[in-house]
Length: 143
Image (cartoon, rainbow, N blue to C red; front, side, top):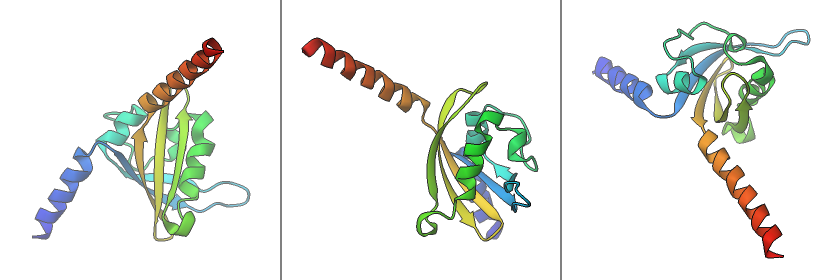
């Protein structure tokens, strides 16, 4: 029975459209930020990061995330015990070579683990930008 339940959860984890990753946290030391090490990541997460086929488990976040985004990524994971331990939501742009907007919601799992859910929101951000430009244009021509 337990094996069947594990198979069901693994199927859900791998088949869902949202990126999911769990991390082990190596606490901060002497002016250095905490280090996050991937424990598990589903295929949707790997698609968002454009690392399909790569074995991410055991790698430090800094080995996969563009250096220009590492501070934002670490901040999202570090503050996962945010408002009433309901997790923290954050949106940020992944720089070159990925060029995507990502929404992340991170949750603490005990003291040394974090789980995070990732959504590629690039399409939504582009639509927002286009709509904003159109509104600006309409304001200028309507006066």
